[in-house]
Image (tube, rainbow, N blue to C red; front, side, top):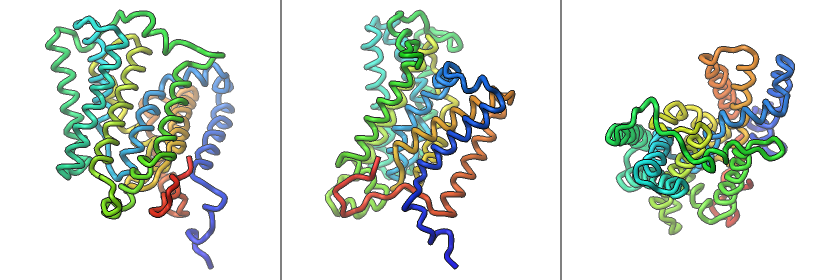
Length: 337
């Protein structure tokens, strides 16, 4: 009798399909529990609550595919946010120039951690845990140095800055279109470029990649830089949406980010993962939290079903072997988007 692993699931089933079915199931279940859940305005309004998680998770996917780990993204969000306010209010920068500087800062923070991971060969978990405390401490220190009360932050931003996250096109928040755009960009980079193939190879077999002429250290370092850019973008979106720059933004985002990436099918061992899977997992988690809240579940308990879902999903992948396909070492084409 054939085992579950011998059944050719991969020929007709991909993990992304499971996530699509999960999202449809959530719509049916939560729509039944509370019909208001299915109102388009309510559904699209919930996007704002998890969009920052999705933006960062797209870029953290690159890190995990190389076999790394990134738990510093949340601290970079807070640092980027408060620096936007300081560049604008204290140094007199144009608000968009301040945002650009925040992106450069996020990239630098990511590259700093990536350099230690790639060139000093320190475990990614240790490095990013240490830098998360470092960046949080820097954000708090700078806030106190310019005599800004931490709990108040910086507000009073120009209307053009706070308006872009409040825009709606056909009733759909503009943040949703930003998310779609970033999905397309990161998907092309990961699945349709030579750089993306190198990212997969670093996770599959870094020694073979080195023998093939790939500078694995540079590739690994760059993925942390991309993650830093993603965190800075999330910091800009949060600052615009809330109208305030604070150093503690993002402090609760670390676990949801990693959950979205892993639930999306990315292996923490490296070499496996897709942008589409991460995007769908982000939506599934966001809808689950929103649906449970509308069903009357206390916000303190919303992480419990998400954790259970993650455990079940990882268990299913382990039993039936449904994983995103690896990129072939000999193939010149990247894995499907």
